[in-house]
Length: 588
Picture 1 (tube, helix red, strand yellow):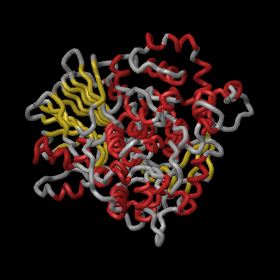
Picture 2: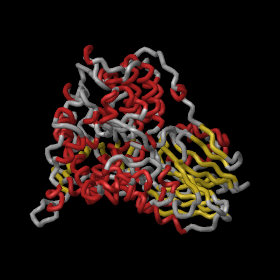
Picture 3: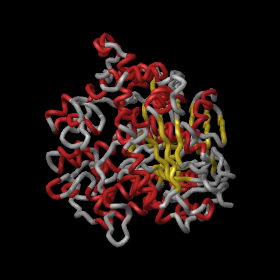
Picture 4: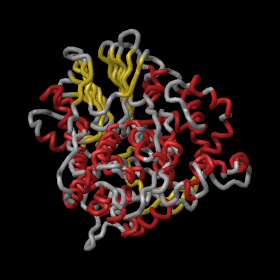
């Protein structure tokens, strides 16, 4: 992922260096009067000549972009009278604007956020992709300036007010406000009625993965051993041979996994990698490794949301190791649980209407949770993550299915995400081993090892007192933390981002196993066990808290605080251990 920063109406370019970690390959800066467009590049397509900002033929239109446009070759073919300066996939944006005006954004198939400046009249537009895969913020200065940044830290010290730039929206200086350019049928939350077609669903997802194999640099897949990442890896392995990427870097796929020693994900990922024949890289971390990284993680991912921090930390540690191997792009499995109702709390959905509305709410909120995690945990180390489940065409197919098919019916052998599992249950040419295809959902923060979350809670209890919790509502009146773990993260966040606007960018509300607050009402027992871990789905998860000795708090209490403190002695093993992590083969 690249990083962009635009300052429109202010002659201060000093903030651009704050995003340097996102794009280590090139720094570009353009000035026109009191407007600045800055770009930190992570070169994935056309590394040699695709530096930004980008321009149209006479350089009257200037663009700074973060993202990938997967259909750029088709779009170039629709612009026969235009001359392109680079081979960059983002080069089409200035020319599309020249040809179609502001209405071109829906033509883009990809993940993106961009600022376009038309120097002919000093107007500008800003846009963000459909569901917010790329991160973007907008702020307003007292001097009338407008700031656009890929991260909070690019503008939080200079704006009187700032907020998340809403996904699927466009901001136009000519109209002085936002408008939604992304208007799919499912957005209205009307209940769909299309029959389930497993082959259509399979084709749509295979196409989504294949288009993301567009790269001019070494890449791999994130493989947790769960259904979603395993399907991504399987499809990638099937279709890699014959692609441009395979000709440049070799046809053997590299896969990456992270976890505590003996964690569920490590075992399952190793089995899937062996089945698919990938070059597998397995990274081990300890609870103390993760705790030591928490402050860096919160600084980079810019949230105090508990489940996001829990899951971001191992991903942050893994991304550093992946980048060190020379890999610059990975394909990941985010988005499936939101689309198909894969979280374990969906077992308690009372009817198909509630089920469908919850999936709609979850997709609309992805930019504040899993998209934010995947984008910023990787970008912190100059790594790009692509997410085929959030392909626009695939979402349209999946969200048109009558939700009756998505409902979880154990008595009929239909577990969570059954429609996706069934679509890839091919007896003649199996994509995955049967038990992996039907493995129970593990949230990433659980799958890396159950003691990870328990260890975090025990660590937070050492730093947050009961007295602090009693006064929490006065210290943090917005999104008041209701656990010591949440309070601990909030203290760190406020130290980095003390502005009120910053705290408002983070979502809140009651949640169990990653549910929305509305879905907590589906089971009366959940209101007494509010925790975003999948193990909080009592009566559903095979290792639920109730089955292993009580509540979430009781589980945390079992982790010895003395172990946490004494983990810094000289007998501690290396912080991050790598198993069978061969160097990426580069074929000239």
